[in-house]
Structures are given as C-alpha cells and as structure tokens.
Length: 284
Image (cartoon, rainbow, N blue to C red; front, side, top):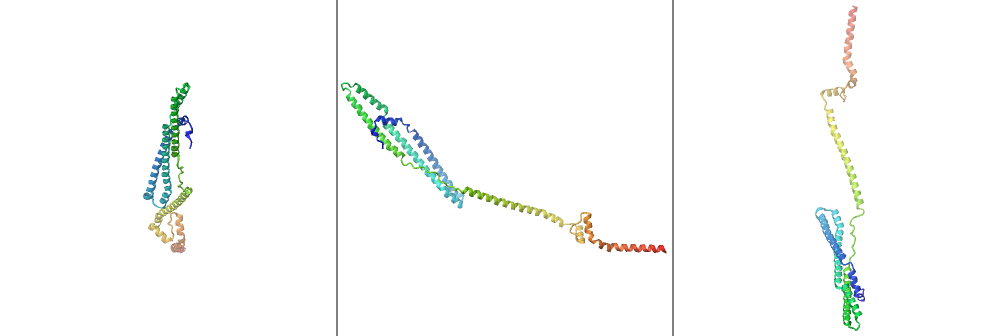
C-alpha cells in the first residue's frame, strides 16, 4: 500500500481536493442500477413467456427443444442483472469512500494559513517572543499531517474493497443453431414443391372431372335420339344419322342393288311387256 504518512498534508489534501469528485461514480452507480432493473425485468418476462408456451400453448418435441434452448439465455439475463446490481453497489461504495475522505482531510486553505502564520512569526521572532506560538502552530501542523495520512489510508482501503471482486461480464450464450436457417429454408422449399405438385395434380384432376362432366351431357344427347334416327340406324346399320345429301347417299349405296332388283326390275319388265303388246297391235 502507498505510504501516505511520508507525504505532508499539503500534498495529500491537494490530491483529494484537486480530483474530479464522486459525480462520475454516482452517475455510474445510477446507470448500473437501471441496467440491473431492466435485465431483471427482462429475465422474469422471458422466463414467464417460455414457461407459458411450453406448458400451455405449445406442446411436443419442438416445444421442449425451445424451452431447453431458451433456459440458458434466461439464466444469463438473471446472472447479468445480479452482476450489474453488484457493480452499482460497488460504484456507490467507491463514491461514498471519496466523500468520506474528502470530509476527513484538512482543507488546503487551513494548511496554507498555518504555514503562512508560522513563517510570519518566525520572521518577527527576534528575541524569542513568538516561540510558543510557533510551537503551537507546528503541533497543529503535525496533527494535520497525521489526520491526512490516516484519512488517505482509510480511503485506500475502502477504495480497494469497493473495486475488488468485480466479476467479468460474459457474453450471452448462443441458443440458436447455425445450420437452422439452412434446414428451415430446405424444409420450406420442400414443402413448397410438394404443395405445387399437389396443386398441379388437383388441377389436372379437376380438369378431367370438368371434361367428363361436359362430355356426359353430350353423350346423353347423342344416345337419346328421336324415333326417325332409330329407324335409320336399324335399316341401314349406320351409326351416324345423315345430316346432308352426301351422308344420305353413302348410307343408301349398300342397298341400291337390292332395291333395284326388288322394286325397279319388275316395273322394268312390265314396261317391256306393254311395249311388245303395242308393237303386235300395230302389226296387226
């Protein structure tokens, strides 16, 4: 430890009074307290959300994996909040130690006045008339020396205690999987492909259903013909009802010889017989 007793009170008091004060330490303590409060609130809220999800709203292996991954982060929040609270307490202790030593040391103007008066008395102490006063002032100066040395040693001890045992803050634990994004993207792509294939199959199936539904009335209309069509199909053996002259001739052509032999040829014979009768009558 630094030997403050080896230095005069002017030195020790001047160092304390010339410092920046405890304002920065008090501001740091306030900031650490605010951080600790926010971290404690975040840890509590985080743990409540995880517990509610895992126990009430989300069940299964994925829920268990989520809770297992999130628990270390919640613990880190709580631990860091405690560390921040400890840092605030230690900063406050350091500020209090400074305020205590500031009040304990002899103000520099008092020490300066003592030294100035001693010099003045010594300058006028021609026949020793100021010797007693000078002795009293020197004794007082000795008290100043001891007072400042004791105050500084106490301050050194308190400052060491206030800054000792600070735990180093740790970074937040990693709770995600680096390959998770790639795995998720692959799963999404696969699901999208399956959905697209399913949609295509459904579209084809729907189109086939629509075509079947459309063809059914047409087939019904084709099979549900009128009696004239049925007679035509029966007589000709055709499967298509004629809608023009060409179709009618094509349907009639296979039966032309039959119709000629059964109907046309007898009429032709009768005509020939009548013709021969007329010729015989003419000849006489």
